[in-house]
Amino acid sequence: MAAFLFILGTAFGSFLNVLIFRLPKGISIVSPRSFCPSCGKNIPWYDNIPILSYILLRGKCRNCGARISIRYPVVEGLTGVLFLTGYLLYGFSLQYIEFLVLVLFLIPISFIDLDTMLIPDVLSIPGLMFGLLFALLRGRIMDGVSGALAGASIIALLYFVGRLIYKKEAMGVGDIQLAALIGAFTGWKSMFFVLFIASFTGAVYGLIAVRGKKEENIVPFAPFLSLGAVVAYIGGKHLLYFFSP
Figure (tube, rainbow, N blue to C red):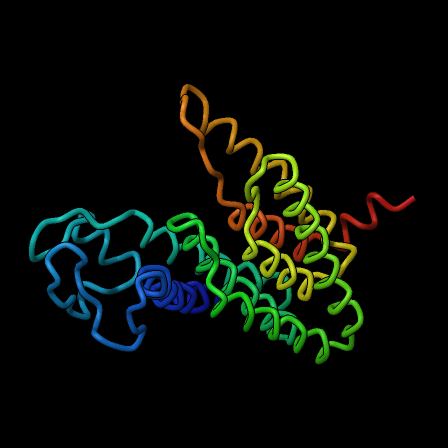
């Protein structure tokens, strides 16, 4: 079962790669078939097996020899690991499905933000709706609503303070929507841990990224919010217990 769920997760990860590549470019996710970005040739099914095809092809297109981004197997492997992790933690339950839906929104949002510094409404808004739906189904609708409001309010405050201090956008409106999405899934109490983890890891990344560079470096915040969301979702209760008086 563990092996099956990991493989299933990598298959979903392969689809997420399609979203990550096509959504910012306005290309349909249904057609055309998978193709090489370099030569435009269709990729046959046997070259489209998650992780395995990348290894067998040694990270190159069979037709033109162009390098295939390491991101493809990374996204597939990450999705597979999270599918397996959720099952080990929650078994086959409504919470397991909720966890999977959360990560299936967070992964493409994070990688699209890394590429474009934008968070698509077509992912963040439906993700928020799903978060509230699961909150309703699990009998925690008020926690979900308050979590969404808390997440959006805190990031909105940082957005306006950043504009006031730096005279430009320090964060994007997409980050506000993403924080609302995350809060709907985690609840308002866990949002403090989400923001702490996101701020700390984002600051560390920013310091490393700008070291030795004179030009301004913009740090995408969605990957760090997503990391905080997964950690808080999995360990939120334990964190709240540990820090409670």
